Image (cartoon, rainbow, N blue to C red; front, side, top):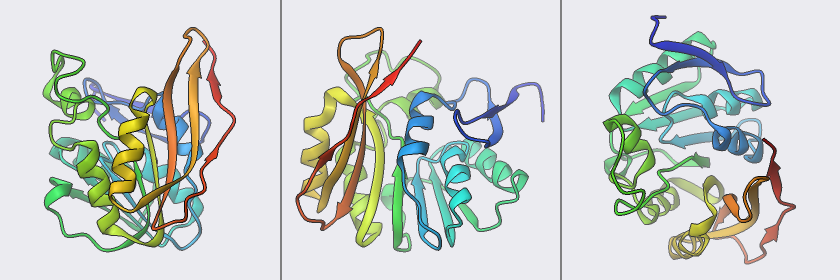
Length: 221
């Protein structure tokens, strides 16, 4: 690969893949979600906003029958395809485009590390187009995400997401509006900060109300 690419791993796993400098890259939330999500053998998995394919690469370790990734940025989608080929993952299909307008097959599991900030937050849609798209809800709001997840999930299918802890009320409201019942939740703390910074969420389509709040995770610096 050219000099603008690096070869990195998802923390806590043996998954290495290529990333492009200047684009959204593997971070702590990627690793947190990779360890939180539960994939069973033979399941069909969709990653919305797959970026370089890191979460799909981790999911492949659990022998799913099929992996799908959707990415709105063409360059990131090409890189995800390259990573799948590089890792020898033959049962992965990477689609380039806006997930809101796609007709997708039903799956058993959806995973997503979505844009966290409303367009009016984190103000200056600050960075490059690639980073701004990954960080802000310009093309995919939380409500639109949950609506699409509900459409593509099989009955009792599972949804795994990492998001900002300060949006927990928005998260629960959006999930339930679209028939996604929160089943487990885990708050993530940075030892240098007083409040939770992230939250990991598992939801079940048309599941019964019975939420388990798990022991918090602490990120040590």
